[in-house]
Image 1: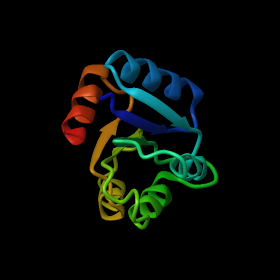
Image 2: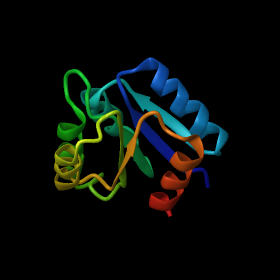
Image 3: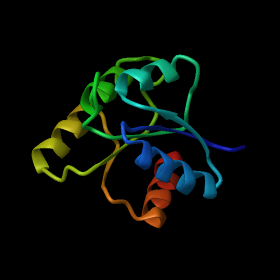
Length: 121
């Protein structure tokens, strides 16, 4: 059965890169433009993994992760943070919010797919 990945990023270019990389790896990819849109998408989907950015309009990645973790239906979904941020304090904040892992942009497609496979297993 094909696994579904939700990508949440305000950059159209990054969404396109994630779509190409994850689709080529055999995943079904659904997308959202920011954290608020990600919550809207989750109302009708139950992805196997979420890949989210941190810096986004309307609802940032920290707020998005916290809301997903407080939602009984989606709280167990692994969440990978994919961001340009590499600050230890922000990593710790994401971990406390409930992030499963952290990947720094620009991403290596092979390493991204390996991380998704690891948390989706």
